[in-house]
Amino acid sequence: VLINGKTGDSLAATDRGLLYGDGLFETLAVCDGTACLWHRHMQRLEQGCRRLGMEAPNATDLANEAARLVEGRDRGILKIIVTRGSGGRGYRPDPGAPSRRILQLFPSPDYPADWGQFGVELRFCTTPLAANPVLAGIKHLNRLEQVLARAEWDTPGIAEGLMADLEGRVIEGTMSNLFLVSGGELTTPPVDRCGVAGVMRALVLDLASRLGIPARIAEIRRPDLQHADALFMTNSLIGIWPVRQLERWSYDIAAIPDRLRKAVEQYGFAAGDVGSVSW
Amino acid sequence: VLINGKTGDSLAATDRGLLYGDGLFETLAVCDGTACLWHRHMQRLEQGCRRLGMEAPNATDLANEAARLVEGRDRGILKIIVTRGSGGRGYRPDPGAPSRRILQLFPSPDYPADWGQFGVELRFCTTPLAANPVLAGIKHLNRLEQVLARAEWDTPGIAEGLMADLEGRVIEGTMSNLFLVSGGELTTPPVDRCGVAGVMRALVLDLASRLGIPARIAEIRRPDLQHADALFMTNSLIGIWPVRQLERWSYDIAAIPDRLRKAVEQYGFAAGDVGSVSW
Image (cartoon, rainbow over all chains, first blue to last red; front, side):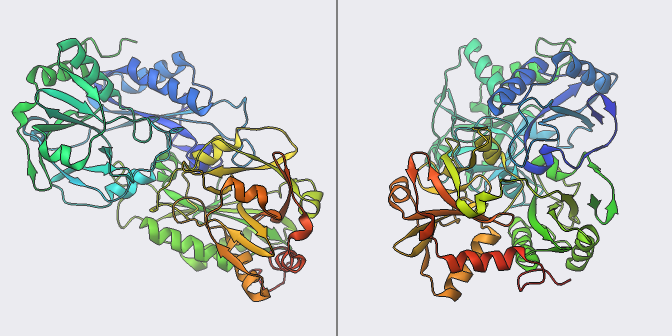
């Protein structure tokens, strides 16, 4: 663990990340000594800091620290947490306070190898996502909803759970974004009232546009899921997970455009490719 | 700072309180070597742990650790944080994992002495409170809404800001609960969709009942505030703050029942009184 560039595995008990969840994080795939989609993650982190009124960490420091951690690592996860540091008075932040950066390296998740190829099984979660336009889209540290939703099941065969807002709009998975395929067109829910604006979600939308695959951001409700040709989930570690089964509904994985899956694999997971970081 | 009973001011960087805001806290007034309203705070903490599916800390350990910290202290704040500890896999909590308790002692806030007596000035915040029945009422560590709301002003004369949900229901202050007085009756908003079930709010409701002052839990909207005789804010550190002014509206502090204010002062702030802790 690197905290503000120094090795150490502990943190001030006064850190506002602990006290209030006052901060942000990014989770990056590490492949062959580089952190994938680095610039996209850094861009989202900066936007998040701006929206929370936090000082963004120095970009060069962050890149150097990440490079130290991932150097020589074949695979893994780089987690970057940025908090508003210590200080302020109660909830009130100290306007000039420097943020604190915490970088941690973890082993890659040991998901079954066939999930990416042959698809996963999903369930519906009952824990709702609260709507707040001020926080929506940001990958902030207030994640109790996701913790409670993920605690709803422990069946190893179920890869992910879908979460909806209080009005029944299906928004995302506990740790991934949702795409629906219908008649060759992609749909993913808006994240302007709740949900996280995933880096892989953005990449998929960009790639779809480049590949001429129609894609739109629109509300998704349960009947839309029932009648879809295919579903898939995205995040920066898994790339794309096709959905084989959602509760009692089955899907045709072949309806997911193959060139999209191939393009994502190239971008997100092969070191040296266009999307990987060059320090 | 005591972390699981041991002196130390730092915390594992893997603590789920930091990673996800996966935990709870209590803020207690310390007076003459005791922590006020101890049993009420402990009851709320236990209820919160149950609702989050977290192991509650051992009650005796917690009481002993609190006693060590507050012993001989004239005044101050005791902050108790309980997190789900380290571990689990991503958002998924480890079901049997022991919780971690972090106790910190702070000096009393230096609010102007006349705020409690002659009242405070409030403003409206624009940061909304998101509705989520699963989290409502719990004093959990996901407090970004309060941080952003409190960052909206830095005028020293303004003591507190009122927060509303997305439908315009006024719920609470950033760090306190709201009561309205009209025709001798008290009203405080429900906290079953958003907001914190404050310990002082519960005490005020109990005292009102004992004193024969009519009180109800009901929705409050801006026009209700405009036409109220009086308003007051409550929390475990301030007891009651009468409201002198809210934006352009002025209030008659004398409309707050004097015996209620006296009863709260006795309960919350005088050591040795009925409400204070006996270890």
